[in-house]
Amino acid sequence: MPKLKTHSATKKRFKVTGTGKISYKKSGRGHLLSTKNSKRLRTLRKKGILLPGIEAHVRKMLPYA
Image 1 (cartoon, rainbow, N blue to C red):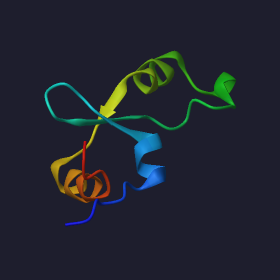
Image 2: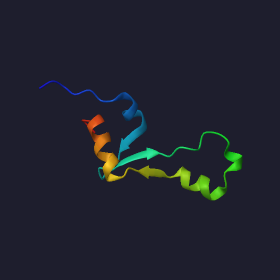
Image 3: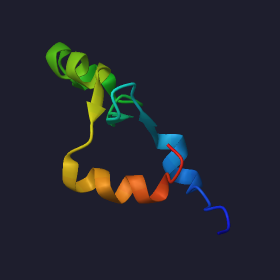
């Protein structure tokens, strides 16, 4: 059986945690931060955890993660 290729864009955006969940960085922290309130920026600072339905698609693109 040949090796499977990892999807390059997926490996840059997602990371598997120690417990096996898939985490990602939330969008909206790049620019125009002065118009966003403190509470919104604080929640965007945290890592996001993928929902189970989407997680299945990402796992196919990360075969060895």
